Length: 223
Image (cartoon, rainbow, N blue to C red; front, side, top):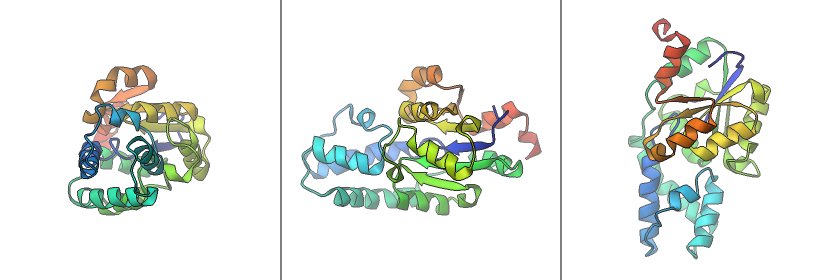
């Protein structure tokens, strides 16, 4: 999987941290505050959106009187304690990051999350130093499945997109990596399990955890 690869770029939520479950819970509680029952298709509708794009979508779809910044601030406050206390790294992530670092393979993060929450995660889980570039979708014109954020991280890393391997847990993210002309590995997550067939069809690789990558590369015993 790592043959002819100079950089590995990770999505964050659902890919390297187990956090997708909490966002559905936040959406339910947030809409309930406004007297709105969460539609069944909501999570699918906002998949891949940046934090700001999601706030705009909520404001328009649910006719919310709050400003975009107020919506984002409310979400940030609701998510903060969960990220601080309830969100762990997924299986094999720390070992894989360590291996990539040891082998001088550049690493970046391309997330649709909010910058403040992204920084909280990296610092809380003590993984910031692994990454040479950390970008959020609010820093580019278009969220996933647009390739914008992946191309920006590749530019930061000074690596041709075709020499990058992207890890993603949702269909829109996988498409973003493909649209950036990168190799893409789909990652299992409980939240997107119903899309597994599509994820496998789109991506170059599919794994249940990062541990599988280490075993495939035959390096786990060397860590």
